[in-house]
Amino acid sequence: MGYRVVVAGATGNVGREMLNILAERQFPVDELAVLASRRSLGTEVSFGDKTLTTKDIDTFDFTGWDMALFAIGSDATKTYASIAAEAGCVVIDNSSLYRYDADVPLIVPEVNADAIMGYSKKNIIANPNCSTAQMVVALKPLHDRATIKRVVVSTYQSVSGAGKEGMDELWDQTKAIYNPTSDVPPKKFQKQIAFNVIPQIDVFMEDGTTKEEWKMMVETKKIVDPSIKVTATCVRVPVFVGHAEAVNIETEDFLDEDEARDILREAPGIMVIDKREDGGYVSPVECAGDYATFISRIRQDSTIDNGLNFWCVSDNLRKGAALNAVQIAELLGTRVLQKG
Image 1 (cartoon, rainbow, N blue to C red):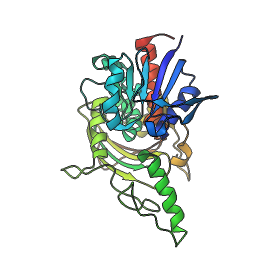
Image 2 (cartoon, one colour):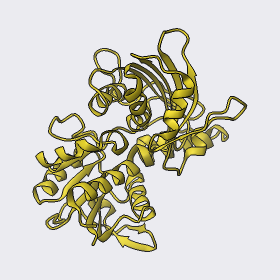
Image 3 (cartoon, rainbow, N blue to C red):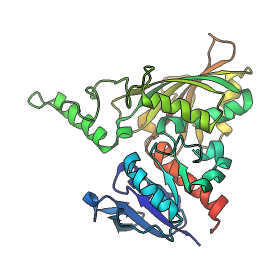
């Protein structure tokens, strides 16, 4: 016996990826509804070998549906998530709206699966920020062994994190550089993204950090351990899919790089590719379309007593968004709804 599942925002990058992953992982779906806004109403989307037509989220009745995967942004989620939740449908939300709500669990299944039981307070579960999700998968097993005190991370985030508009802007600007008669000024991003990097993701806050950097700090504390100190610099780079992160950790106990490598090899959701030779690491192009979070360049940090550096790469549309949401759905099914 399977579940009655809703995917809201089915025509967007993340919504389509949710449908792909539900099919790939053979999630037990008895019935599937795909929702979109009225401007996308009637658009067809693929689910395995089926073609589905989107329905209007504004008039959809969530009564009797088991779970809804939301990929519609914070503004629309504010309107529709409570409607679905009050109708008895558990919402798994990809936006930032509920991530910092004390009554809503923020889940990465490899890290804090037990926290899912907190869903019942509001019938909502939050999916973390894409840059946080891949990092905490790597932090958790190391924290369990040596207790992480501090994290310093610099991110290299692809334009797909800004949606289809971000991908289109990179593509159009790249073409324009080779065509002197055309000009594509920045609209989605603050500066030209083609052949450039932009040290700003989201808006600036009073202390000089950006909202994206703040998200990484707050979400890591909520998911892993509130005592961990996190400082981040988040950078947009001209890559279509795949976020990369250079991570430095300081631990309470000494952790040898070889032991860290062994721990990460055994950790769920992680693939270690770490050869000290040309090309012996994973880049964003290679991780696109894969489920795993890839860890490379694990090495001691000799500037502090208990320090390690590593390189972390993942497909942000998958582990950073759609895959994690589907994994939450799987966890919800096995631990809570228990139909299959």
